[in-house]
Structure formats: C-alpha cells, structure tokens
Image (cartoon, rainbow, N blue to C red; front, side, top):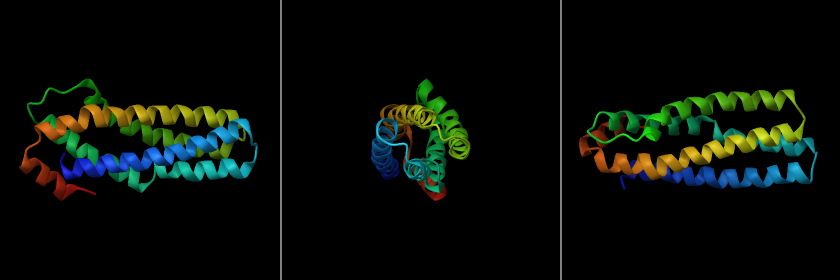
Length: 152
C-alpha cells in the first residue's frame, strides 16, 4: 500500500480509538449521568472529529480521489460519494457545535452523536475497502508524487 494511503489509514485508526472513547462517555451520559461536565467533555472529545487535522485529512483524500477520477479505473459509486460525505461532515460539525450551546437534553445529544458516529464509521469503511484499494491499484508513481507535493 502506498505510504500516503498508510498515513490516511493510520489516521482512521486514531479516529476509531477516539470514537471508542466517545462511545463510552455517551453510554455513561445516556445511562448513568446527567452531569453537565460529562456533556462538556463529550463535546471537547468531538472536536477531534472536526478540527484542523480532520480538515487536512479530507483535503488529502480529495487529492487522491480527484487523481483517481482521471484514470481508467472503474469508479464505484461510493468513491463519488466521498466528496459529499466530507461536505456533510463539515455541516454536521457545525450542528454539533450549535447543539452544545442550545440543549441540555442528554438523550437528544446522545442520539445526534450516535447518528454521526455511524455515518463516520460507514464513511471510513467505504474508504478503506473501496477507495484506498482502487487508488493503490490505479494511480501511477507520477500521480502519487504530484499528490505528495500537495499533501497537507
């Protein structure tokens, strides 16, 4: 696997670990705690899923996706959906920030975050099982070099 794809994969692994911690806190909030500090911690943890690192990660994936679209590769519909997913995650991040400021209803907070997590996992699975293998197979060394020069 190309080293840039390995970097993206490692980032996914890191995010999956963060999500595991978020899910534990969600379970606590949903079943054990109405503590406002737990909700505050939850929203702080969510920042990792839509901060600068996440933006750069998506920008890097887009570099690869656009290059892949210039090849003769058969393009799976999920590869076409990746850009829309990235845009949706940016919108969801804004909604989560608004949610943090507008409600103290822990069930609303938990439901919204659990929905986001499911979408995030589906997105990562598509990238790792469809997009990354296609890019690894179809992109040339010169395309990878060009991508590397634009990498964030």
